[in-house]
Image 1 (spheres, rainbow, N blue to C red):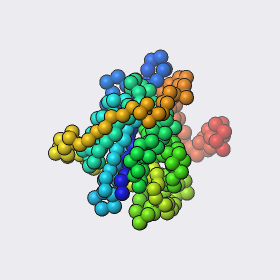
Image 2 (cartoon, rainbow, N blue to C red):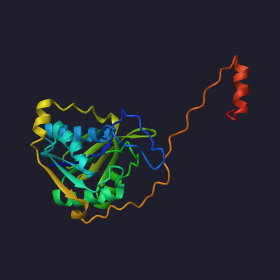
Image 3 (cartoon, rainbow, N blue to C red):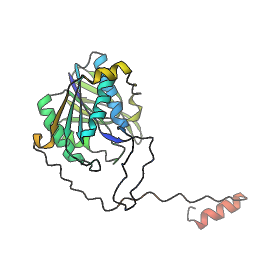
Length: 252
């Protein structure tokens, strides 16, 4: 079985995001970029499936700017077998929308014929949480989202999902699209020998036009602003005063 894993290049989660002075977007100048943390988890899960003998090949895909090569090399160093980079933008500030990404991934799936697609549940830059679901719809495949546990049983995947009320376990037919949550696993660190080996692993470059997909944005960002600073709290001297304050605030 072949496993396909889409990965995205995003601002590193340890970096404090700065908004441009004119409010036109996020400032990416001299900012550390990394693989989306949820995608790291999906890469790790795909590698574990291969190590367990349940997958034969792990292919990672990234759609975006040429600099996404670095992200793909990280996935190859973790243990993926080969990579495909679809260059769909020249400007690092242009975010390819989920539907366009899903259409490109569908075209790649038609070529690669994987038995399983493992996606991060969302990207930490736009938090859209849509690409996996859109891809499943375009392919006509089953889907399991927010996975915290994945087991492959023959031609079925047993997935434990994190839902509002707790945990839900479902069984889906393969091929399928699974989006992973934070508690699925702990991604490994790439060793230096594997980082060196990753430089020799195949990385194919394509363009969105190669797949006949128009990536022109359908959404326009009108303004970007930082959230308002949290107001300071107040101290009260007694329970009666606390109740009084809560009543004034309309909380009681």
